[in-house]
Image 1 (spheres, rainbow, N blue to C red):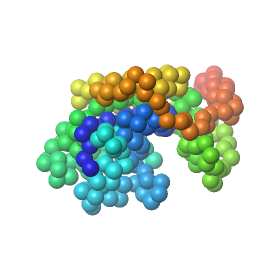
Image 2: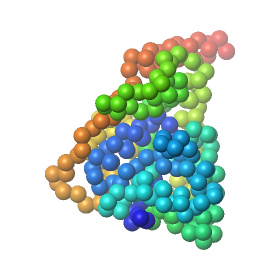
Image 3: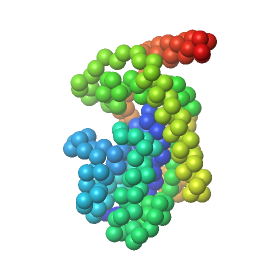
Image 4: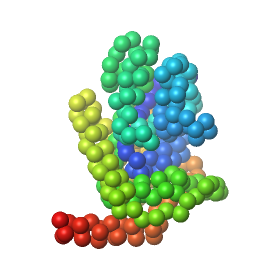
Length: 253
């Protein structure tokens, strides 16, 4: 089923996409947003790379089925750089070759594939916390955790200064790249800050519904929350260790 209204959540790793996805899903009105371009946990494949290049129609059917709710609203996350870095441009190039795009390029190809397309920009103010989270989950292999579901193959993380520094650079450069993308394409996205989302979960979701023009009752009942916060004392310890080590390096340089 081709959706009637679409939105893309534009972001970088560890900016709170799972939290925002849960908030929007729990409204029952904003589709089922997820990383449908990049990774399928059931098949352990990259759909657009493994299916999109060879079978465009099958890929679009897969994409629409994954992200579209009963009311025809579709949601999807797009990372500036994903499990393999800097692939957004390559993904767009693949979509441009789909017959449905009729030789449209760039943003116009996206709008052809995603009817009534809206952009949401999710950022995280505390870039160091974001980098620490990213470095940590790359080791634990637990990218999100739900109530009642035990994490499989958990690996104990170890502090790595250079990994955190690299993830910090990725986070900063990713935000700059998204800002450039929006500016070049004259897009004014709905901006969400992770720290605000964490404090105002339901209010943020309702703000997105307003942005998308989706009607909802004044007494809208949200589904039960099941996402577990992963940050703990380790994150705080690593932040302090990184700041101390970074200060020492700057002093000695």
